[in-house]
Image (cartoon, rainbow, N blue to C red; front, side, top):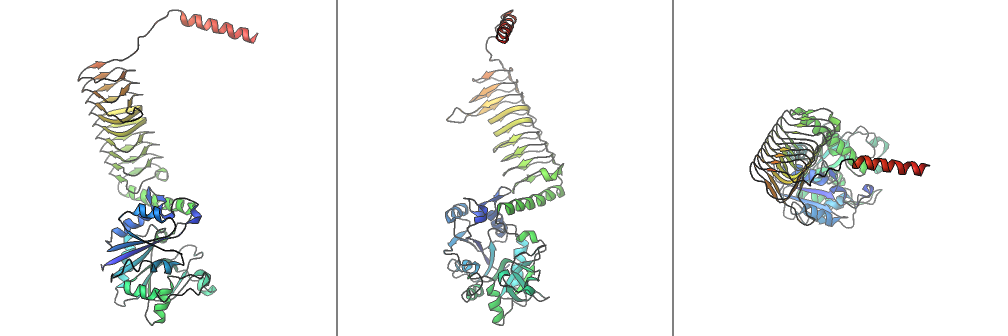
Length: 451
């Protein structure tokens, strides 16, 4: 590939989102839509990436960090004007320029590459435009082109004739051009149009008028150029992404019992022969090994499940959870920042936070690690093959040794040695006949009150 830079337009106010969060920072599958786009661009190795910002500038600059430079468009006078703002940032750059949109997050790297390749075809077009044919052309700008892809005219919908509006080839807004051509053409763009704006598409018409030619290539996946401007469109984009990821997961060897109910994150990693039951949600940072079973209504985030693990139903794994090979957690078990050793199990109604649990240990129902004193977090260590009885409270910091037993109902605040049995319970009092006398007295009072 030739050297290229990317210009990403993200200066719009996004008023239809009705949100304090910048439009392009709204997440899809746990990742900001802008980051979806930048990740695809990064696969091609750009020499530079420039994001054109406007409203919400501080939010974007904080989110981008050092991954891209930013330039300000103020006032906002159209897409052509927006691209012009990047000229100074790219001063001295002589390669190609790819123009993208922050609210069009699903453009594939191969589509971007095809645009740049077309720019360097034998006929050397001045500008390459990405076109698409949606089911409903709506009010998209139209690309009027010859059968060989040479563009005769580009026109915004508001300025198009009825004949031009009948054309089904629409302008995605994405373009590629050599830097020298792009900025020279932009300098000649005027705003004599229905909106009084400087349209980016006019660079094509100006190049044509100069006797040069421009070309259009079409995507075979119109969904990749769908823009997101409202909450409804954001939901549609989420649905589109999830449907693709579910199909991918099954093609790679995972069984989804009810695919439409499983939600993945952008970075979910699944092994082979994974079984996922209905209504499972993956947050960011989850890696799942081979032969894992995730039962219904489980929620995972920031967790690692090694081979042969089983979780759920109704399990919750929070960040820092690691389940070693063959371990198991059951219904209504929550883990956070905890390692569950190989073959260890916690089958029901348990909270394990800030803990290290040895291989083969058994954690009884209702057990909790009391890891927080209102100011600081503390760790619990449970040795291999330890048995923790039901309804136990392990008050951290505390260590339970290998092969140790903690009796049911214990509140353990001191270390338990290897092989030791610990029982911490209050004295059990017996008062013969007390309950019978109590019931008799209360029944009598109730009868008097009714009378």
